[in-house]
Image (tube, rainbow, N blue to C red; front, side, top):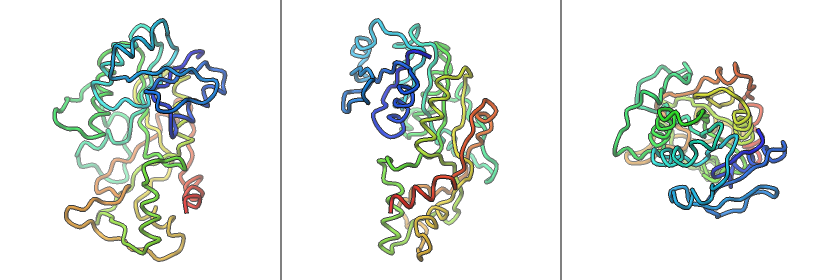
Length: 287
C-alpha cells in the first residue's frame, strides 16, 4: 500500500486513521469539503462528494491502492463513488455501522450477530426510510452489487472516545451529576462498543489486508445503559426511569438486541480489546 485516500477524515477516529497511514510511510490524501485542514504531511483534496464534476476534477490523474470512505451515508453517495473510482482504486473500504443490523427483526439477546445477519447483496431498497442505518444498508448494497472494485465494509460498534463530538457520554454525566433520572428502556438490552483508537486501527488493518466483504469491529464485553450508568456514577447513587410517552431513551439504551460477533475479524488476524481495558479510564477522563 503506497497511495491511500481517506474521504472525510477530518475528525474523530478518521483523523487518527490518517495519522496512522501517514506514519507508516503511506502517501495519504484526504478528500473533504475543506472545513478542516488534514494533519501535516498529507495531501488535501477539496471537493464536495455530492458534486460529481468537482469530485472528478479533484481526482483527475490520480489513482489509489486503497480508499477509506468515512462519510458514505446513502445509496447516492455510493453510486457517485462507484462512478468516480471505478478503474482508479485497488480496494475500497467503507466505514459502516452496527446499525445495519437494526432491521426490526426479533432476535434473541445474548446471541451476537455475525456478518451474515445482514446481506447487502439481498437487501431490498426501501424508499422513504431516511434513517442512518438504512442509509448505510443501501450504501453497502450499492457497492456490493456494483462489482466495480474489491469492496470491504467495516461495521463499527458504537464508538466511544475523548474526541467524540456527539455528547452521548456527556448526557450520562450531566444527568447523574444533576440527580436527574436517566431514561432507560424497561427491557434494557446490551450492545457492542469500541474505542476510537481501536476503530482507527481496525480501519488501518482493513486498508492493508486483502479480504473482501463485511467485517464486524467491536471490543469484547457488551454493555447495557445501566452498565454505563454504573461507571459514570462511580459509586454514587443514580436513578433510571422508563422514557415518558414521546420522550427519547438515553443514548445506548436499546429495547432490541443486535450485538455483534467479531470472530471473522479475529480469524482474519485482528485482535480486539475488551471494553474493561479502556472504558473506565475514558469515563474517568470525561468527569
